[in-house]
Length: 250
Ligand code: BJW
View (cartoon, rainbow, N blue to C red):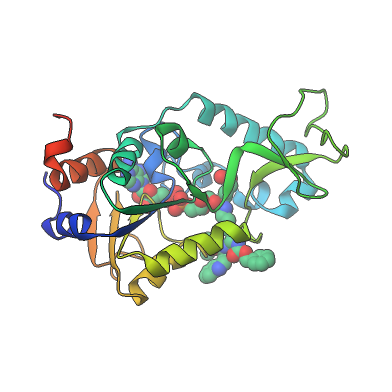
C-alpha cells in the first residue's frame, strides 16, 4: 500500500516537519496504549485511581507499584520500525521537531535526538515534596522509596490529569507547531489537551496537518490528510516513498 501522494509531496517539500506521537507508535513494541477498547490501560484500570495527584495522595503505594510494573514493561520493550523511520526522516529533512506524549523513552532509544517529552518519562522519578528530578534511587523496603535528598516519597516523573505540563517542553512544542510547514500527528487519539491543541495551532498557521493513526480521531475531519493503519508499517512506507534512493529494501 503506497503512501498518499499528497503526503509524499508534503514531506519532500517541507523545510520544518513537526511530529507529535502518542501511545499508538509504541503499540507495536508491546507497550499498551491507553484508550484502545480491548488492550488499552484504561480498559482495565481506572485513571482516577492511578493517574491523578489525588490518587497518589490517597494510595501512594498502589500508584508506585502500578508505575513500577509499567516501568518494567517499558524497560523490556524495543523501538519498532515506526520509531526508526522517524530517525531516518529527521536525517532527510532540513528541520524535524519530535514531540511525544509518550513516557517510554523509545524514540530516544531508536536514536531520535532533542525529543520534547510533554508528559514526562516513566524511567525517572521526582520528589513529591519539591519536584526535584531523580534518575536513580536505592531499592529499600519502603514503597514508594524515599527521596535520597529529603526523604519525602518519590513519585513517577509523569504528568497526571489536572497537572500542568513542563513549561519549557510545552513552550518549545507550541513554538514548533507555529513554525512548521508539515505537522504529523501519529498514534494518538487526539483527545488529551493541551497536546491535542498543537495540531490545531499548526492548522491555524497554514501548515499541512497529516494524521497517521490506526483509526479516525477527533482530528481526522480537520486534518489535511488522514492515513489509517499501523504506524510501524506506514512510517517506513512513507520514508520509502519520499526518499526511495535512500530506503533499505523491504
Ligand atoms: C495506533 C496503533 C498503531 C493504536 N499504529 N496508531 C481542554 C478540553 C478538554 C479537557 C481538557 C482541556 N485542557 C485540559 C483538559 C483536561 C485534561 C484532558 O485533556 N482531558 C481529556 C481526556 C478530556 N488534560 C490535563 O489534565 C492535562 N493538564 C492540564 O491541562 O493542566 C492544566 C493546568 C495548568 C496549570 C496548572 C495546573 C493545571 C494533563 C494531561 C496529562 C495526561 N497524562 C497521561 C498519563 C501520563 C502518565 C502515564 O503514562 O501514566 O498521558 S493520560 C494518557 O493520555 C497519557 C498519554 O500521553 C495521553 C494521550 O494518550 P495517547 O497517546 O493519545 O494514547 P491513546 O491510547 O489515547 O490513543 C492511542 C491511539 O493510537 C489510538 O487512536 C489508536 O487507534 C492508535 N493506535 N495502535 C498507529 N500500531
